[in-house]
Image (cartoon, rainbow, N blue to C red; front, side, top):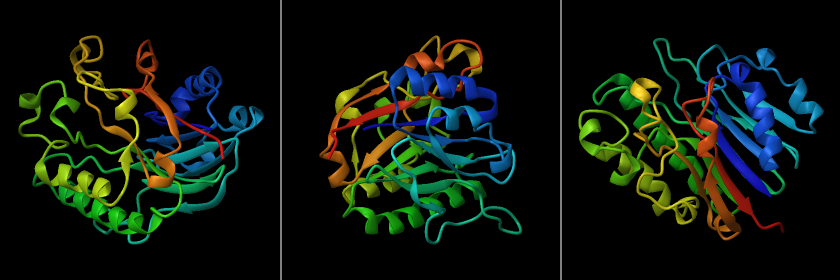
Amino acid sequence: MRLATWNVNSLRSRIDRVEAFLQRHDVDVLALQETKAREDQLPLMGLQAMGYDVASAGYNQWNGVAIVSRVGLDDVQVGFPGMPGWGDPTEAEARAIGATCGGVRVWSLYVPNGRKPGDPHYVYKLDWLAWLRDAARDWTGAPTALVGDWNIAPQDDDVFDMAAFAKDTHVTPPERAAFAGFVEDGYADVVRPHAPGPEVYTYWDYYRQRFERNRGMRIDFVLGSPGFAERVTGAFIDRDERAGAGASDHAPVVVDLEDR
């Protein structure tokens, strides 16, 4: 089975790219983040004609997650137990959706950005991650993949220049500790062994030709439970998908699993 994750930065704007990506790489399951649309606004007819089922969650033009699968889409769950909301009054955001695809439990996750250390959104981010970790501890006994845009660069070589992020989110000790907690609980970064750094990234800002200069960050991950990780046979980052007109600012991450 081939599983991929991609922060597509508007599915309506990039549906042609998504369909071409699925065909080019023969992907079985694709987790999407930042779809930026309500469920009834998503352009799904082409995907369905290709043999894919789609489960999605989206409430407005912000956030949004989805799972696209041609190997089954069962037990769909929007949000995880205890998932915090945002705003005043607090409202749910479309940042997590889970489904069982070909015997693997897949969670498409769009972790809050955090904005700036000390910002209320930063507190929200850490709280969101804490609740996710609490829920995910119960999922390690089955093949489970926590995939998506984590908005965290857990190691120094996951950013092009640590000094450039000294006062920013994504690299602060609390964020990195939150990410490390999932590893401590048994989830493994299954991509890094197949795509070693340095200078291997998944995100490049549109600002100042960051992509062309390879000034990026590695913030998109596939974290696998033991039963998932032991089946991984390969992985790669499709950097070419970040190139060209109309590209998302993220590249897809692809993982291959042996069939069972």
